[in-house]
Amino acid sequence: MARAPWLLVGGLGFIGEHLAYRLRQQGLEVLVLARRRSIKKRRRLAGRLEKAGVQLIPSQRDFITAEDIEKLSPAVVYHLAGKASGSWSVQWEAHVGLAEQIVQAATRVGARIVYVSSIAVASDAAEASPGEIITEHDVPPGPEAAFETIHAETKATGERVISSSGGRWVIVRPGLVYGPGEAHSEVKLLRTAAKLRVAPISRLVPIVHVVDVADILSMAGHGGFDGKVLHLVSKYTLGDLALELCSGRCLRASVDGLLSLGRLAPRSSKLRLAWSLVRRRYRYRSRVLQTYPWRLGPV
Image (tube, rainbow, N blue to C red; front, side, top):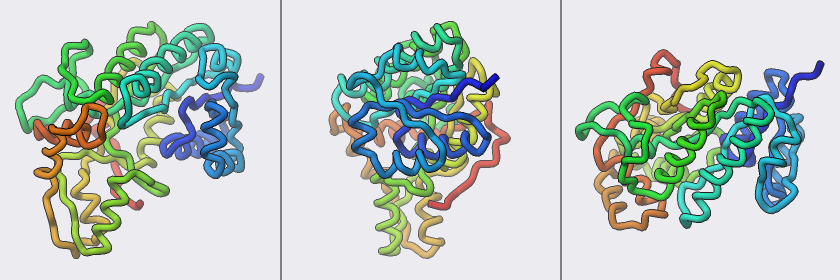
């Protein structure tokens, strides 16, 4: 009997591409469910995935429904859709509305859910003194936190949708994800600065390599962390990545002070999100993944 496929929802992105390749290397049937306009917009990425043996499934409407997911009968559903900025309705639909559709479908077909959240949830919800190390166990599960950003608030709500579903689930909270093919503005800025022999240093923004993310998400899909919340943050920070890109030959310039300007930015913005990560000077770690061999580079 053929094994049930593994489904990536919101898989036409940086994490989704690397995860799909990892799962295909394991001989799994991998499906990516996306809106038709997303497939058309990201044709080059879609083409690379199809060459790797990944099947792209267009949704029947301009949004993804529980019925779209259920008819594929997946063994595992990954919620990879994420918006770092944007209006309340846009982020709510990506982080909460889609999570509700996935829960409905996964409950009917008995699929495991792996929900990709954000370390920003911990930066706002943790109850600790400034400068402390924050692990998964330091973040209360309820809605009590006063969230600095729409991103963190909607991701936290999505976490509660998943964890209260009654099924098999894993929640992961990545920091800033980077790696081969990275297109995030933060990493582009570091590359440009390295060419100018400047290293913008932030010891408070947690990072994680996309290969490590794909590795851990794969383990989560195989049942390695059922019922757990994971902090996907390496032992490295944005400052370490800046120095790595410079090979240690750059002028160091701290940017944590500049990020403090984010307190004046809208709750919907990436600048406010960056400030939320540094304002309490927390350091983020994982108890569950404390023996994992995190990597630094390449990009």
